[in-house]
Image 1 (cartoon, rainbow, N blue to C red):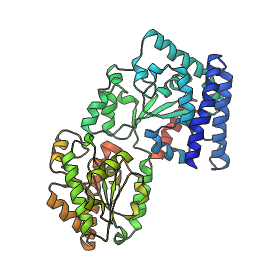
Image 2: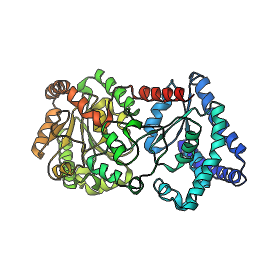
Image 3: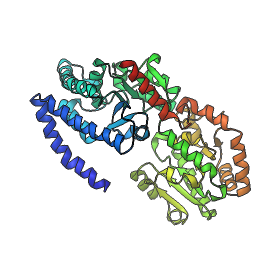
Image 4: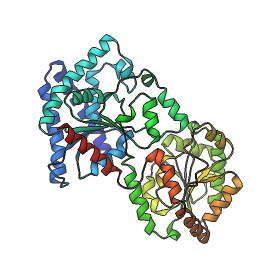
Length: 445
């Protein structure tokens, strides 16, 4: 059903909308575009009020659906404190397409073209949006905005209009907890080096380390940054609190989050861990061993690299499609190397294992990992032998129980580890962010 809806949106509605928006723009018929958004937002708002029972006096917050921001948007969308309206891609991308020529389209490209003709094109788009947003704001259909990342092209005309109308425009830095290696690559992108002036009122960042990221990329000064954590972690917190009630002898999944990509700078470590993981699966038939990859191409690549004997291990699965959170209650151990899930999972009492031998050590020294080897919130394993011993031990009930007691004594270390990356994982991040939106909106009225 979702696939059919997606096809209709992309193949039919998008084409019709393109014609509608293009004619409205070329003929300067702003009233038609206003009426479209008036109906689009109103329907979604009244659904929240009459079906979901949200308070009609809640402020209406507009956001643009983005894949990189979606996990946070889903959590914000659940909030009963605001009425969040998500503008779908088939709407915003089609509207954006009529404003800007092909050479300018793109997250980075848009900001690099500052010649006279390009600036005129941008200004014309902003001037078209301004009266539409002004009317939506008067109708209480756009009290504020929250968007993902400062530099997305489709936000700019709306952000400019919002700024002129004193409508709060908040940005959440989705790329907020980079390793040192990726931090440097991020801040050295061309549009950041050009010191582009981005549009926002406040930039929300997930942790204290992202303050430096935002400042060094010329995104924002510290006065404009609010450390909030991520709404997406509220789901993580809820799930890990739930599994506290699950008996440890029911937890039978050993999970390896694959790191079979060059970006991790640990190819030899990955090959070694994969071989050992397969052997452990073969020798522990009472447990399910799962390798979670990021996408289908990486699954295919991984399966191609495995020999016939490894593929035939009955309690070993390789998959990219399942949701980790669907199996969390059954998780016994998580193994990975610089996985963001490891960070989120530190709010729980689950054994978290980080292999750290071969080129894993070199990757660590190059700053391509999240880790701090002096922090006791994770278990760093420095040899194949120790890795095998530990996983085999964690498959024994009495040793597993002893290990959980040790984790309990190190929960503060985990909290301290999280602070620079995710600030807090406490189930209250959505509430914290909606409070900021509400406060800034009240100040603007």
